[in-house]
Amino acid sequence: MGIVLSLIKIALAVFLGLSLLLYFRQDGMIFLGARLPSAMLDELRRSFPESEMHLTAADGTPLHGWYLPAPGARPAPLLIYFGGNAEDVSGMLPDHHHFSNISLLLFNYRGYGLSQGRPSQKNLIGDALFLYDYFAALPEVDRERIILMGRSLGTCVAVELAARRKVERLVLISPFASLRALARKHFPWFPVGPFLRHPFDIIDHA
Image (cartoon, rainbow, N blue to C red; front, side):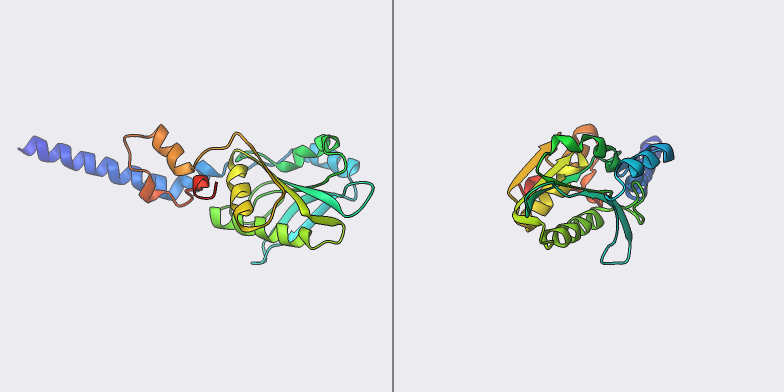
């Protein structure tokens, strides 16, 4: 009987330890962060001297990104790109020529690139809404032709934004149903759900 109780105590201790680890360390596990080397950032600034932007989120957090207006007739359609969980979206700038006649908006999540603050599901969605509203109000943007593109983690942000704002098109690259479901797949033996603070349940808005 003593051995059984000891095993139960060990199992409970392991469960508690894993639960605390998941709850308090998940930010670093989900939001890996990314920042381009200084030399590469300097090169982008030389190549796109008028495209760099600094905006302040509703709560005062400084956000950094790039806005490349489409050449030619205005108002023009706008593509907003949301990157993956280890991506500085500044790296997308050299590919801007693939989006001819479309304005391109690239803004880093909090804690990514030169954007300040701490990333969270709430903050990422809130900043996406802020950016949409800010740029959709510009006279040079055709608000009837706003396109959202997300990759990996960015698909969660794009889908959530599309559920709350009018968009013409939604492009998802390597999406997943929800972070909760993904965690269950990789850790079927552990009840991840109750301890996940950033579930990113895309399926609820699909």
